Image (cartoon, rainbow, N blue to C red; front, side, top):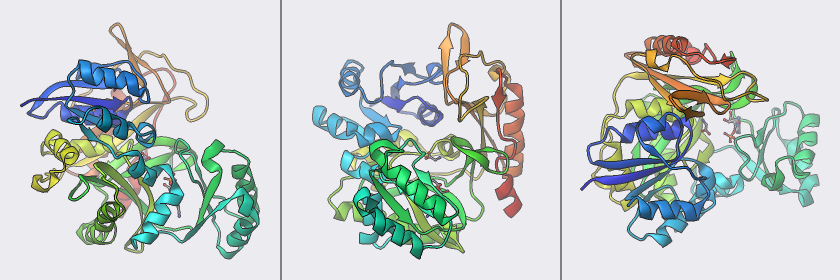
Length: 426
Ligand code: AMP
Ligand code: GLY
């Protein structure tokens, strides 16, 4: 029986997920809500907001949707899965309920979860405005730099890492004064972990799980990972230090207790878990949980999955993951993100994008674009996520940069050093 699928979201992540689903054998019709200029080529876009639950429900009915894949965290934290489960008992939904989404929606919840289930993470305490003096005292016990995290969702900006005590105190006071709105009414202060980060992705049905290819992302705007934080400037997969020995530790110490911990806590979690890890001298520590796939990691990861993603997603939603096996291809993937000049600060959009049709042997995922007649226009800070695959990271990087060179729009910018740090480790 064919499956009608709705992918919710509009970024490069959702384009990559939709692209991978579009190659699966039992796909009926594919919809993206709202989608982008890129998804318009492989799916039918449905204009609607990702938190417009009633309108989404209407489309689930009208389009006879069997499976919904929720891309971003905001609708998950807002309870889209609970809403859809209640409205449509037979519908398969990939994405946790609001309770499970608290793993990302509240840093304090995530830290308590890790403590409860003995999952390695940085030492921490949580404070509010009322306990400001205790927070200052706790800061004194830590060594710089200081890690301050707004408890709630802050569009990826809620972590601040001042490198001296005076700045940390100032930052903390600003967070309590509403720097991140309600999200920083509570602040987690934690020990700084030094090491190299890696993003690990798991698809679970609440009992069993599949481990997707791991990846590393590049968060800063500037070459050498300098400058302002962005939504992500590139990604690479695999990550050379995440070898089988390291990944065995990740599975034993982190993935297994996370999945079983959710079940023990009575949370029926069906969806992706993105574990941001620090490799501290060969041992993995959890930096953060996200309850969705990463962006732009997904744009690299999806190109390495050879098995039937649609079958895995359905099985995860239906609690039948035990019978699924994920096949990962050994090729390397490098993603280079093209952004609008000025991003992550002020930038202009609406520029026509030229040359995508000249790209050979690379995937051009759309992070922020829209169609206007035959033209594709930039429509966001991050515009395109260009992914190339090759037998090794060096070759994949070169291919990705070659593909980027085929594409142009006014004031476009990209980092030409994506993957260089991991190549240096080879
Ligand atoms: P998050 O928004 O939780 O992803 O945090 C943003 C970034 O801050 C992470 O990707 C890390 O680079 C950094 N970070 C978060 N927590 C820590 C920590 N305890 N030690 C060192 N770096 C951290
Ligand atoms: N690439 C990091 C994230 O999606 O949060």
